Image (cartoon, rainbow, N blue to C red):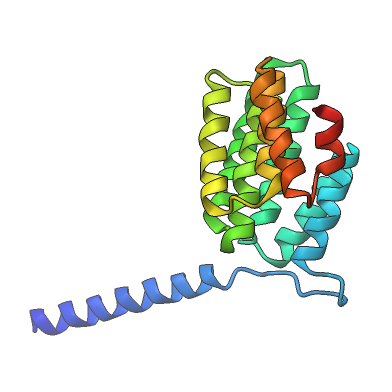
Length: 199
């Protein structure tokens, strides 16, 4: 009798755990409203807005991407960049700390969910950019470490070289910066105009 009761209790517990897992796994995700309503499209728009300095619009686009796909790595990376840029603009120390924590949490998620070489490079480059923007203790070494990971994934991608060049320039290591910009020019794909100006 005891074993029968234990078996029923165990079965009921297992069923409850399974139902809970199913419920959590089926968290509501917004359905696309048009052909252009994709995580990729919103993330690309978000990055364009970010590069123009429109942080509100960038954040809105990254949020839309994450509503469609909560595990879309590049949108998390974009959110990290936005939080880091906001960190630079605020003066309040507590607010700065919160923003920096949010930035690194988002980058961590972006790195975790990155799929394929391009997304992995994008995540590592974002780390370089955030370290360069926020300059926490040991920032240059951390940027270099992420640069190594990025070029380990794809040594022909120009973004790691360009943004590592920017990091070296901010650290007043001008010969190292010049070497990075020169590599961008040698690759002759993206970032050539800005790398040439910086060089």
